[in-house]
Length: 205
Image (tube, rainbow, N blue to C red; front, side, top):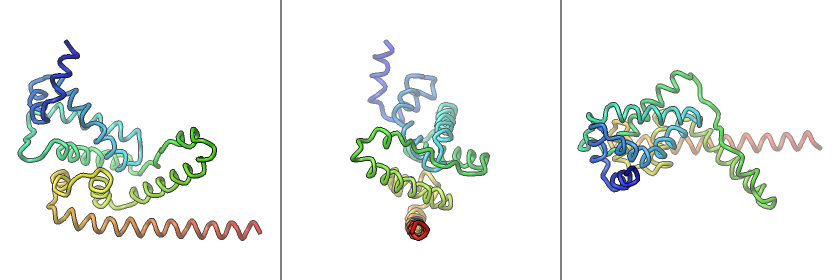
């Protein structure tokens, strides 16, 4: 019976699942979790730089979803936008509590399992990705949010505006500024690395 209940909920719209969740339907809540938890996790991970913090935030977001399901209005925002808004609030609370960003704990397992011939290329890709992640984490929060939502999560401007409580024009202007800042930060990082390499080579001679 549980399997048939799960199958029955998988094809329902988010709004229907939310109504059932508000009525205490655990299968509906589980379906919402399966459908959207990965999206919330990616947002939280990119915003905090911490796998542990992201996992905690996902739990908090879905606790809020279950508790406040009866208040959800699909006319005001699609469920992904609503969840991004809740995740944004929970992320801010977590960062305010921690008072610092946690360095990205990106796994190096890919490099460890890469074929010998691909190891150098794999390490270089990981280094470039970590460089980008650090640059994103260093952005002011309002710019980091739009970069994560629009450029990394592929959220539309209108949905990002609904999640962040901003007009679409504000999203566009913030995103333009965020991209400029990110480009500048990446260029400075590359220049510092190049300078470090030159100094290292001089010392080795």
